[in-house]
Image (cartoon, rainbow, N blue to C red; front, side, top):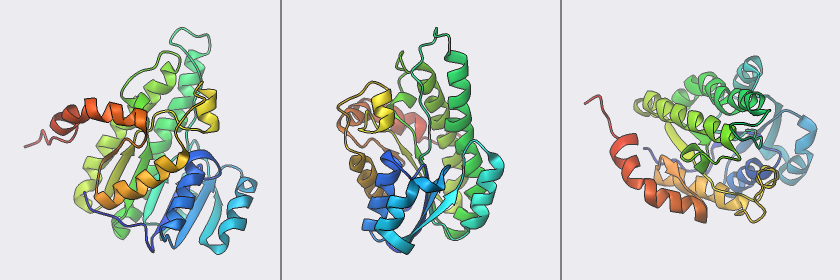
Length: 245
């Protein structure tokens, strides 16, 4: 994969107003990004980032569950080099929970179809600008956690799609990065029952480094790196292999 530096690049981050998304914005600007689009459902939620970074950030209203919203977003951000699809939802739900079907339906809409909408809307722009698409997946995309069963299923689907998008774009000069954090200290992490998660900057700084290194997978935190060690052989021999040859 091509190495991509953040310096002087234009980036776009969905779900940029808090948690990992906010940390990504901060890391990108600290590493010299020229401009970052803050793609959020509620434009009022990015006031602190606007005060902090001034004209280096541009707030845009967008909802990854709304295809027309994402198409409008792409029309506004024709100059973007790096798109980070960070927005996601999580519900605590076991396979036998009364709300399992409703939870999975919402998680698929945002976590999976959201990726599909973003990838389709921005593919031509990223090809033209020879950029990168970064997808926030999870260690739950590789292992199903029973209390987060529907979320895990949605992330397994988004990871599978991420692999397909990579194959479609890699010969067109577009880099793809699949990010697989473990528990992170965010509101979502707390909702999932994790009180001692890794810092959000572990993820955001890891993304900067992984793009520069030309990696496809990023397992940023301590728990995630345990997955990486066990998964490496499968990744090398199956996920990254070209079975068309």
